[in-house]
Image 1 (cartoon, rainbow, N blue to C red):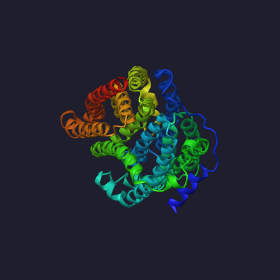
Image 2: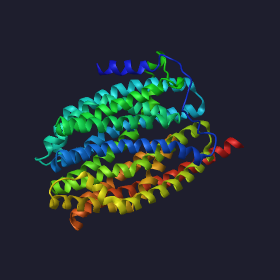
Image 3: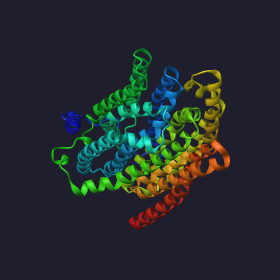
Image 4: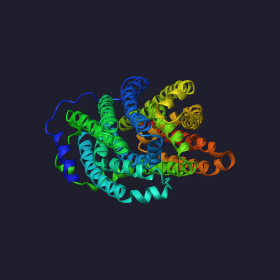
Length: 472
């Protein structure tokens, strides 16, 4: 049923051949301007996405209570792991899409899109079965506290049921971003945010469905975002595979998998590291879990611009790699790095100045309990804010390397991120108490950069040599 629905929905967008719109050729024009203008709508769209995630947290925290908020927190990393695998595999596919578009190879693009659809159907089916079937085991492995495990399971049951919808959105959005369309994902997230806020208030505050109501609202909102992207794909002939393109092609599938699996694995490894951290956090009690959760929800907002710069670099580098413009990739990366660092400094200053009242929006309860939760949350937020520039450079360099078609080095950086996060989470609390856990995230970023920075320069040096030979 799921497979048939996916193909039916996709074929709806291929009935008409409508002139291409909203896409950007990033092989011509000012690199900095192109990257910035492409990143801006992605940033705004991601902000809306984070806002509706934050609304979930606010409504649950204020309308249901601190234990429900802790239940959301305990479910966070497991939920993120499945989401990360879906975004990772589709992001990997988008690298090949961008390269074919940069090279002007429409036939290969259509074949890649068709085979990506086939792979996504199979992958989504496996995720759905594993997620629903193994949920209790996963929560048990995470040592989820007994007083919140029921709420975490309920939330995740609903969230995992929405895997087909979420994967469909991510695949369609990846296709659009590869062609330089940053506006449609923005419209999709605005639609999702509005739907989510309305349904959150209705399901949780009016119908009193509790934590399940927040999960239902999120899944339905994702469905709306998928429909917006589906409508946009209808207008792009480059993304219209024929029947022959939907037949499995082992050579094309191999190219997609070689790019998609490392990105997926990278996200999965990072998420497993986060679950180790969550396991340690769970041991400090639900007050600490609630404070940690409040900051993690705000963390998504802190990370928004960095993710957008990363996606921009993947598209920019991918299109220019397909066109063989290696010097242009170097110029674009350098300019984007300056923009990313400046953005991170502005956000860090804002969080240090106004973070505490913002965090207060997530927390309810008696004054004493609320003060304890906020103290935990702000200490964690301050540590992340001071080191935020590292996160922005991480996403930028990772996106650039992925756009160049090198998914293995970013995966290696993800493994280093995992090692640093886990070691910090397990060792620092022994010497610093519970506050030691706050440094795990920042140390993970620096660990990843230790791999990404030399990897980027080595890769660009090799491409420069290739460019010199081509110009001889």
